[in-house]
Image (cartoon, rainbow, N blue to C red; front, side, top):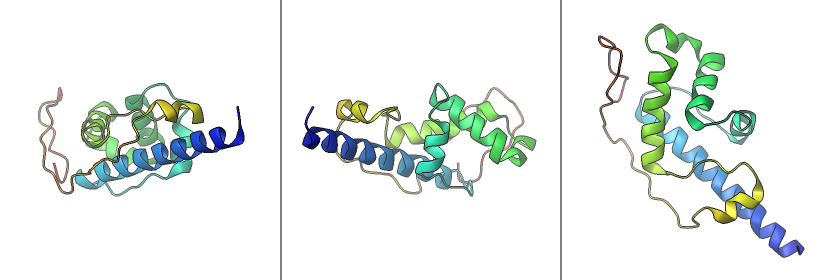
Length: 129
């Protein structure tokens, strides 16, 4: 493999990471959650299998106060629903995987309102939902 090909794969991977960060942070903002992810956060969570499990792990370790009102499962489903609406692609786990991801830019909704069904009756809706 030549250097230009490797550089191209790395650039595509970095664009995929940036798109994931933007989609997650947009979902957090739309739900009124006051935290943001960066590349280091995604890298830390990348070893966890599945996006829902990654979100739950983050909430349990970094935002445990949210678990006083909502379950980690409920929160992760709400976040993932909005994130997936913005960018359905899953975070690539290696630079070569980004070449398989679509290279088309995404258009992100801002301030969309969506309601989310819950298995937990009596829970208030998330702020901004």
